[in-house]
Image 1 (cartoon, rainbow, N blue to C red):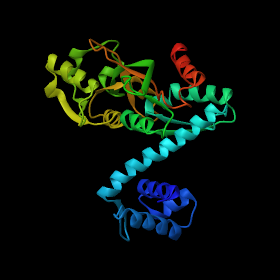
Image 2 (cartoon, helix red, strand yellow):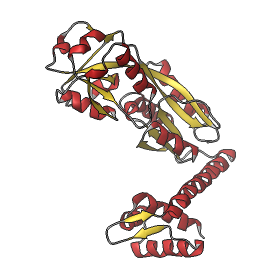
Image 3 (spheres, rainbow, N blue to C red):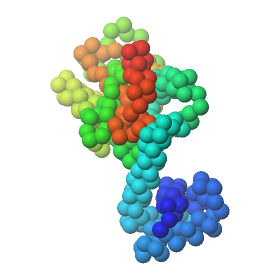
Image 4 (cartoon, one colour):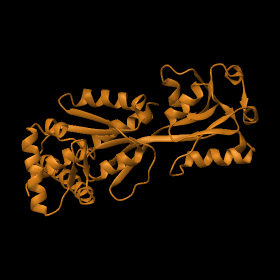
Length: 296
């Protein structure tokens, strides 16, 4: 088993396509297939099922992929620690972000990092809070702009900002021009609400609010993500509560209104692993922390 074989296998496992994986690791496709087959032979198990239409991971492949990602991440981390111990400089910062951060704190952070470290490479990827945490833990990311989490193990979190949940109303709805909207005004409206696989604090808050005010029968549509909720509202099907960053979305015929009696704010901050020598640098974290102080 060779280190390059692990890298090749990870590329195939993530692309699920030998052609794209070969381009990613910059080798010919036949050579990539040969290396993966050699890896499977050495392990004595099949990692991938191949057909003319698709490539899929076997159960053994799923387990081995998780271990490979961790091992390769640990190797990258070890290299960074060695460079840091020898007085070397950072070469790259890998950042994960949830969508709300891309229109707020992220541009300011990138600008300040770019000015302070003009020669460093930056890579930004999008994901959910849980996905970003997993990638921080296996050293695939250095920093993550995510929703609040607890400091557990090596994971560290610093809160930067909070934003309100407001009522998203179609432009033609009578509530759009109303000076003050109350929870009682929703009795005449169809409500669009979140319904996710894992009950979030936000979902629980509004479920309890609707129950308290007898609005459960008004919930006509449900969805599991903010973009879908705004799309449903924009089409005129009803009203729904959404975080205020949605007001910056282009091409949406939606007005955001504060509702008297509804007071929910959701946090946003930066997370990192204290074991990561890149993220744990005081200057990197200090730059992130200033975003909160500057009111971004």
